[in-house]
Amino acid sequence: MMSQAKVKLPVCKACRSRKVRCDGEKPCASCSRARKPTVCEYPLPPPSGSIRPEIAKGSACIECRQKKRKCDGNRPCSTCLITLRPEACQYREHNTRRKPRNEEPVDVDRTTEAAGCSRTVSAEPPDPPLTQLTMTLTVAPSLPKLTIPTPAQLESKREIDLSSLRNLFLENCWDYGLEFSPTKRAAIVRGDTSSADIHPIFIPVSQLMGFLVASELESEEKGIPQDVTQDEIEQRLRVLHLLDSTAEALDPLTYVQVYKLLAQYYAQRDDYQGFAVYLASAADVALDHEAVLGLDDSRVLNGSSHLSRERAEEARSALAHMVYLAMASSIVVKSKVQLHPMIITKFRRIAGHEIEASFVRAKCVLLLAESQELVEEWNRREPGTVFGLEWSTRCRELANDIQDHLHRAIVSLSALAELHAPFAPFHAVPRQKHRNIINAVASITRTFAPADLSFFDCILEVSWDITSREISQQPPTVQWTTYFKNIVVPAHGPPQLPWRITNSPSIEVEEEDAVWSY
Picture 1 (cartoon, rainbow, N blue to C red):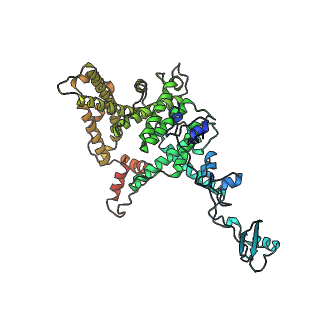
Picture 2 (cartoon, one colour):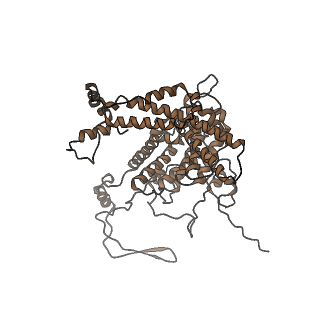
Picture 3 (cartoon, rainbow, N blue to C red):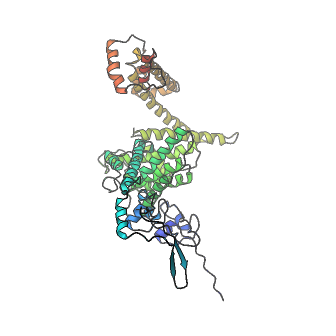
């Protein structure tokens, strides 16, 4: 009886690295049951006829040739990807060896015989002696005169590009809910992977997010979405590899920050499945280590707090950004990403003590999302039905929260009006801005009911007093003219008006208007 041949199933990269059984599905059962989010990817099938494609002699990348390793000729090759140095995988574009000048062409006919190989040489002059070849090679132009860059030049050029991406990420890191200390920011700028000041995973993460920011800026400039580049994919694979590897464990705060950044990355790349997975992972880690992250303390710097101020600010900013991402996705793309209710509860409890910008932004989006949820429940009700006490209580509490938030908006607008007031009498632009602020405060005030006035803060009376002052136009004083010419204009720099005619008689007025364009 003949035995049936066994079918060899493909093994994904994650199962191969962990040395566990793989069922060949996509995703496989092992990756689906993994505690940490795992990308189930399968290696490319080998070409027919050979397990490993042979490449021409001398066609390996510079890194593999120097380290005497096997190279498959890909860009980047698998060896450089495994060693986490894809940026060092460079090839010589002109790898053909020059013939000596005095060497004559030789016709070589290789014929295969039963006993071996015989060489038939045409009747041409013999090859020059070895000494003549050596002298000819020494006279040939040296390699640095060619246009081929050296490995050191390639590496330095690559580092400059990655450094600019890291700087681009740091310029926009507030948008991603990150509060890095100056020490950590300096380590990211240097690309430090020594773990002295920051975990090494933040280097490829910052480069990945730098690719994302650069792609968004290029899309806005050209008006069309940009494709994902191979370099960006390499950085993403490096981040996922470092997350899966257990060589150096990450602390809970680093896990939360990296998962949250990956959620933002996948959301902006329109991969909402990956967005949901990594956002849920960040929330799970935050709940499992809430004591370590300081999410139980009512204040950061009190007697019972065991965290430094920097780590507490980073953890709380990450919490606020998680809430912002979940609520923004539910509003913009109507995704059904649900955060754990305890995350929202902790955010509400901490937000009352925080005035940091990420908390203010997250609270605004949370109020909008909850308002839309209540309205949708109202619209879905059956005709003739009346909501019970639970819906009415939620609606009333939400309205009170929004009113409290509006009180803060009035105080902020009053502060801006106070700054414009000294300049409003002497210039039309700050005077118009001052009027716009007064109109905005008046519009918010009209939403208050008479019964609300008894519960207002005393600071609101000061704000209303600031915005009720009348500003009338006055001729410029000597002090105003001196201040504007010697302080305001030098501080803002000379206004750049390339679309204006420089010899226009109204250029002085236009330059003054440009100073107040903030």
